[in-house]
Image (cartoon, rainbow, N blue to C red):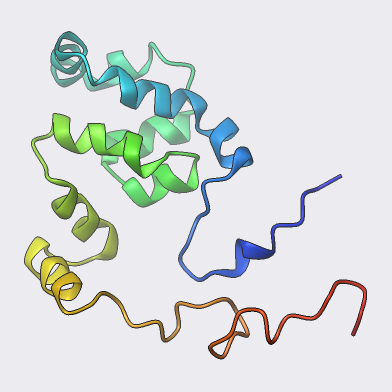
Length: 141
């Protein structure tokens, strides 16, 4: 029986739930391996060969090679594990977040200093300010 994921309608958001965790297990384990200096050296020397040591999907490997962090998240990656890739590349979390939003590091920093993104268009689908007020209990119309 499928799990009711009422949170799946948040625009531009992937919730890291149990299903995502299972899907991204090996991707996240690969990321954690980068905590060891020897593994970082091996990965940087031949990224594809190192990735091929992990039972990740081809799509996950391609996303890592492309440094497409949004795709990595969609494929089960957890941002806190994916940060190890950025650190291996010498990138700050702020640089990574900027790349994920289509902004430069400076644009991202300035947006966050100014209070972050507007909530407009970033709420649950159909929400006008109160997530619960517009939700009807299941089975009732």
